[in-house]
Amino acid sequence: MENQTSATYFVLLGFSDNPLVQIFLFLMFLCIYAATLMGNMVILMIIRTNTHLHSPMYFFLSHLSFLDVCFSSVTVPRALMSLCSSRTISYYGCIAQIFFIFLTGITEVFLLSAMAYDRYAAICKPLYYAQIMNREFCRGLVGGAWAMGFIYSLVNMLPLLKLKFCSSNVIRNFSCEFPSLVDLSCTDTFLNRVMFVIAANTGGGFSFLVIVLSYIHAIRTVLKMHSAEAKRKTFSTCSSHLIVVV
Image (cartoon, rainbow, N blue to C red; front, side, top):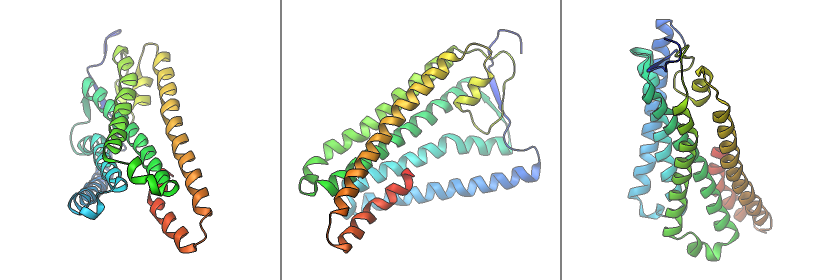
């Protein structure tokens, strides 16, 4: 490429040039992706059709399943394409992929915070749970999670548009990711890195704090219960969410 000109496309180097390895990886990723889509679609269908599951906990779970589908669909199809055909991706396609990785990833982080607060309200304030976690409030939490994901994505994506790529256009990965793209730039990336660190620590720190405080209060409440069976049932309602968070 000519000096001081920006790249119009990037090459995703992927994992290996060995045809047998590529076939193996293609089949493995395809099976994992298909299982991810099928599993999450089944969850969505069950929650939607079963009226007994129309509660805040399953409302958040359905959105988490939808986000898992979106997050996987941002990277895996492009990775599958690079394994069987073209490894090139346009400049704006790369930027768009980074944007949606941020959007779905950060939205999922904030959604996990909302789910933690839901478990806190259910365990610590059972008498007021229906009033606290009403339909409007739950929708507001989900909408807020998407809004924070969108803002976080814009904050990190807009400075990327000012970068120039005048040397190598080879990304040593199977998808466009923020660190890989920033490392290729021949212009100053200090602002990009600072914004990334500030946004990541702010969003991640806030979500982590909400999750930790919610479960500290929830666990304290559970430990005060006298019935072992009640403790077991209460912990079982939080186990799946805790596994995802960990």
